[in-house]
Length: 79
Image (cartoon, rainbow, N blue to C red; front, side, top):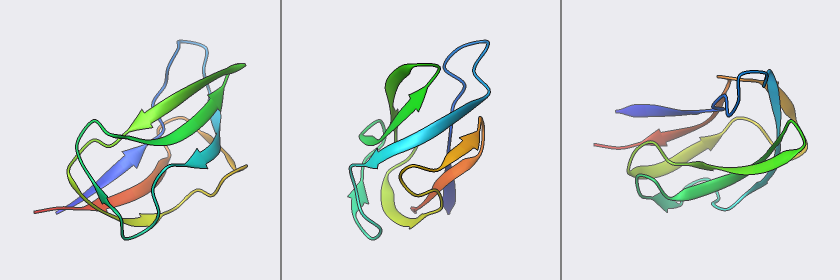
């Protein structure tokens, strides 16, 4: 099963976020709730956690890219 890692909306006024860094690479194993990326939004820096356990199969948004909230940042392949 494929699970999308989406850019969450951290505050009511948040409309977009910028990926600062990925803590994992494509093909790496991740566990649910593990920190996998750092995001800058509304002058704050937050982390995104994995919504599922599996392999980080595809990173869709690269560092320094800015995308709207709820955009798919990556895909996790799991059971």
